[in-house]
Image (cartoon, rainbow, N blue to C red; front, side, top):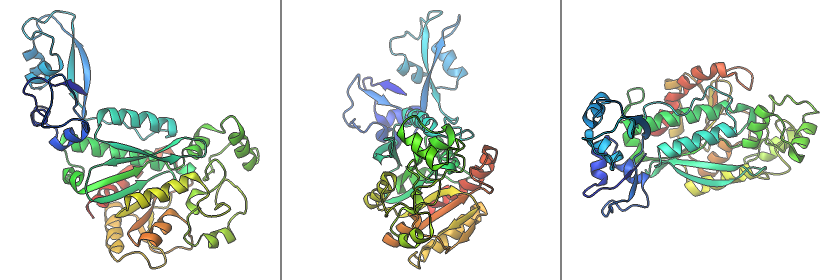
Amino acid sequence: MKVQVRKGDTFWYYSNLFNVPLTLIIDSNPDSDPKSLQIGDTVHIPGYQVSYYKVQKGDTFWRLASERRLALDMLALLNPKESPRNLQVGQTLRIPVQVGFRIVDGRQAYDFDVLTKHLKELLDTYPFIRTEKIGQSVMGKDLLELQIGHGSKVVHWNGSFHANEWITTATIMQFLNDYLIALTNKEPIRGLDVSPYYEQVTLSIVPMVDPDGVNLVLQGPPKGPFGEEALRINNGNEDFSGWKANIRGVDLNNQFPAKWEVEAERKPKKPRYRDFPGEKPLTEPEAIAMTELAHARQFEKMLAFHTQGEVIYWGYEGKEPPRAFTIVNEFRRVSGYEPIRYVDSYAGYKDWFIKVYERPGFTVELGEGTNPLPISQFDEIYQETIGIFLASLYM
């Protein structure tokens, strides 16, 4: 929500008027100097939207504010040209609405188009979210990283490394929405006050690593050579529900130089709907973008969300630090998921991250069943995962 600065207005005043943390208002207005606001400047108030109301007979600012439990000056601020004592029947007023409801509903087929729509709405409502384009997919879709908070500890989450595991993106995005609501409304999540983590943690999120593959699974083959090649790889079958790879038939979570040669020896030798690790490590733009992001951000810990199995993989060749054991046991406590230290599978993002940085890295396998998991599992998966999201911030 945008307001125009009046004489004497300050960020501190807006923080108190709208009951929004001052740091969120400052971060929502990065181009404004809090110490030198000018009359007429535009200021973003995070966590609010504007509704429009047509004045009825007998309405006054005081009555409208009282009925909606708003401070009277909120209405004055949003309607600076209206006379509080002389409202005209039929005129339109701007009414501030604090957003305590979800913009993101994860219970749907969550393709790149849905993600893009939700991101736009979240950025409009919560402009303290920072975004950075970290690369592009094979087909040119932007790979976006979201950042929330400005703590020295950088915690990273990612989803949809595998195309038919798109429910991971829906889960991440719905929790992100709940986190944003909690921050702006000063509310806890499961009894935990999350406001300190905004100052202590920088949360880095790549919600959809493989947008081309996700759209292939949910929308079918695109027109043109990429769609034609995907159909050829899929033996002409237009059912892509089993497709894990990117649009070129390369399994992105087999692309990393962490015993890649072991996987290459025993995996398919040419593009396929799953498991082909590529001709060599890091041939795909999506995998390259994720390695460059890790180098740039220096994550303190990393969580890659996959499906399925209700397990958490957390080791690689003994390079995982001792504290990873403590963290994964907390993940088990809050989710019921079973930790597994080692497994005969390599070349994944988690493997590479632990190998290079010797920091805690986790592959979290959500839900149970056959991929793609049905959307009917979403609510259960989400409730199981909330504790892991939170624990990744405080551990």
